[in-house]
Image (cartoon, rainbow, N blue to C red; front, side):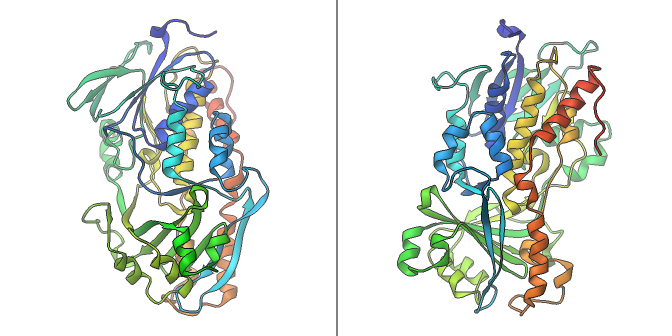
Length: 455
């Protein structure tokens, strides 16, 4: 039965208005058929803006987008229909020498749906259940609060477990607020992660999880004007190709079209094994001279050189990840997205994992069989980190002894990338399995029925 009183709603505070946080708000509204949720989004910046460039939406993630009502808004932004027809994801080319060559294609059902990150974020904003979005059916009430930087929270335990809005939020230069569930979607530098882990009874065991770790990896990102590349190299392979991955020893780059074919998204990554375990000094992202990018890939295939010649304003990103956590939740506070499981941007999994987090959590919080606000422990149990990267920089044991530019037998490269292709199978898998596991755990913990046992 729908909840009629606003005071009876479960108040969910989402700290962080990036892709993960906004996806949660959209998913909650889409699934809240009993009108039991009130959403408050808090963002530290004075306006919503998305940094970065292209992201991949895999069939698994697209399935979720459709289920939460984003399909109609997103579909026109892709360069091919979102279906499960077999498509090339990337052509793999060994490119760390002057005479680069094709190794193989990685193809999967549905391929990859490429979109500019800012376009995806705007789609989420347009689908928030805000009064200013009159075309959106509002099931969950929602507020969007900018310039709200969380500095602390306090949780008031209740022996009965029914105290209303037991979590108090404290902001810098803003009045305090309260909620029933606090969700930390505040990114890899998450304040909520640090507060949560410091509050755990065995907090010392979590000390190494408090701060991100540099992966000894730097990524150069740029949007290339497609017409500028066409002028320089009219027959360049990427102009009419769904995606190319240029690989070399400890380096690789991906290139694909976004924004209706207007731009080519380029991400060129270098890994320095001698710096593993060290701390990055300086800003995590900054604009750098084009010459720095060119120098990093000097001597590579002329085809790739032509591509980076068209770069105008590259940015350099120091890539960080996190030690895998064994819990994402404590009492009524939980982590999602990069705050919970920040990962390197290989396989384009980061945004997709945040969207999956949102879908599973929304299913738990809106479950109509649950009479009151559930704790987030079931969400924590079912979510896991998926990371992969070494295969794409050729930094694997089978290739020890080879250096950048060395000739590597093609049959050895084929073995490497056939194994890599197998690691893409998850992209077209069914996200409903994780949802069912989470709901079974929730209902089992409430004594509604015995949960299934999953290994």
